[in-house]
View 1: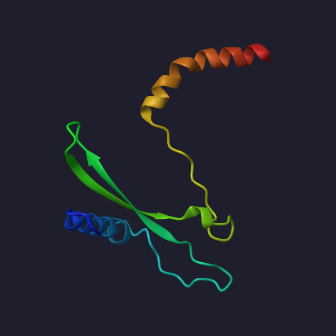
View 2: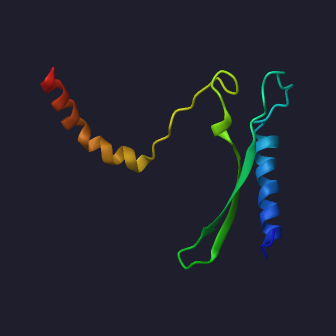
View 3: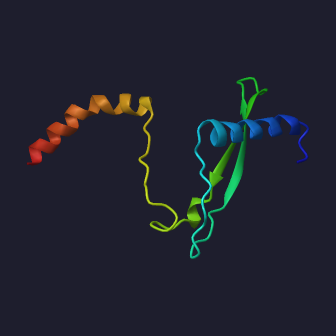
Length: 106
């Protein structure tokens, strides 16, 4: 890394590894089946900025390269999307109108 804040990035990576691998017990080492290839991963780094442009904090996430996965081979579960509360608050007032127009067609 050629960033002057390399020590901050290293600390963030250490914290991410500690929080996911050790305290949350999200990883489990197993033997890879003979016919399978391991799914790769990559680090994603971001700087969170304050409104005045100064650095608020550093963030690092270890992401799986999910585009190499095959259903039934590399994974068996699917996960649902998560909606933000503001999205729900916007859609709730439209719900009675949507239900009324749907029942009108039946």
